[in-house]
Image (spheres, rainbow, N blue to C red):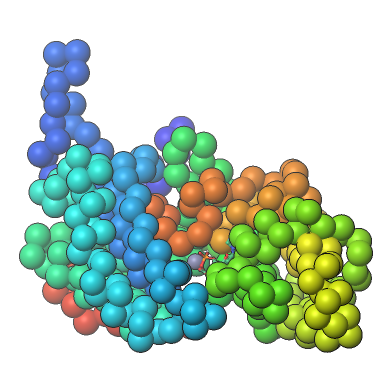
Length: 356
Ligand code: KG4
Ligand code: ZN
């Protein structure tokens, strides 16, 4: 049986026709190569573009991170992010085409993140995507950023097939999803306050590490004792998360210890704090898996890059490391299961800031 969604027509949408510039001869027969999608992602502080085939092969994935520009403010400054997206988006798209050894002539659809995210940042990507689609007579595919993270699992060479229980843990969101098919999922739980990545970032900030702090906190934690301090894991009924109490607990612990002791025990503090976040994620993911009967667990989003989380949930499938944090390959991947909009209808679509 053909893999679900392997061709544009399987999800009930009309199949995209390849534009016919990529014909080559194999074994004496002219073989038409796959449809290719240009993906653009500008929802936060990564300007990214990627070229992905309809079969899910990543032909290129270019990411320009602005993180170091925002580091001195301790977080992303929306206005600064928008301005940098404006400067970077065209060179990044050009580089994605050149790395894939292709040109706009070969592109069959333009996929772009519509939300959730910073509206000013999203509008840069959306405007560029509309301009490219309009000037080339291509369909536009507006993609939800969270569906994009899930679709990072559907890329070659080792895609994860639904049904599965998905833990999405990023800087902006922490969700448990029952993924029934590539185009169909339902939300089981979310965070009531901070996202898991945000908890990492806030903890890292309190420990004097830079922004974004998840990876830095993980590095510091490697030399520490995860049992040295007991940080509370919120006990909520159901499948929701809460991380804001954890950050406050760290703040009070640092205050009580005093500067000198904190300096000596930083690695222990980082390891214990990380353990509290990871055990909340692992506990809820396993509970959701049990509750739904979805035995396969998959983990996506920036926090999925965390080695302790990977070690503590060995039965789960994790998105490839390079696809955990924001990228455009996942956006192009998700576009394969979203309705394509013809011109001129897409010209009127707007970005959205929050989860719909
Ligand atoms: O998915 P992502 O790139 O952006 C959002 O959609 O939010 O996730 C970024 C988040 C940041 O909070 C960052 O600190 C966290 O993912 N992160 C990590 C690690 N790498 C990135 N958290 C823990 N351990 C890591 N190794
Ligand atoms: Zn993201």
